[in-house]
Image 1 (cartoon, rainbow, N blue to C red):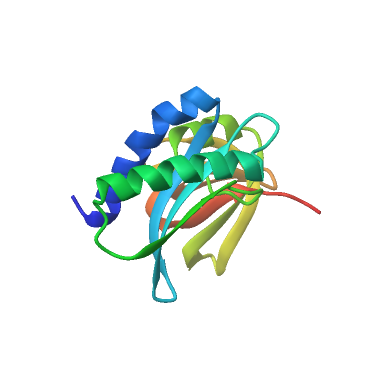
Image 2: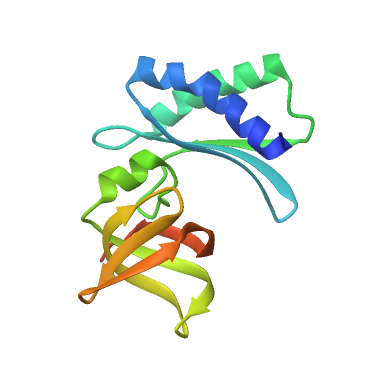
Length: 154
């Protein structure tokens, strides 16, 4: 198992019981390198939204556990936060709760000279995502999707 998957999985396993205890939802855990710095991020949510105080509580517990377990050899920055409005759909539960809602789809490569699509999420499975745009159903292979998230207007 690659470091990325191993780190994310181990942190997720630690956080799941903690999320139940605090009645939070663990949206995602990611291990990423940005501008030469490693980040370990945990995204939390709850009914009515997550607060800074909620993030602080989990951050302290997670930080203490990470120090004790000491399984990450690289130096990194720990971030615990809300996923925000533009959170990507990644997991089964994200797609399930988004059926019938408007989503933005960004592709790695242009299809019909377009990389960006917006429409209603109609269906999904492990390989594909179906979106209805202007009355037309478009089936995307998951492998061609760079990002899919709920669409929002300001």
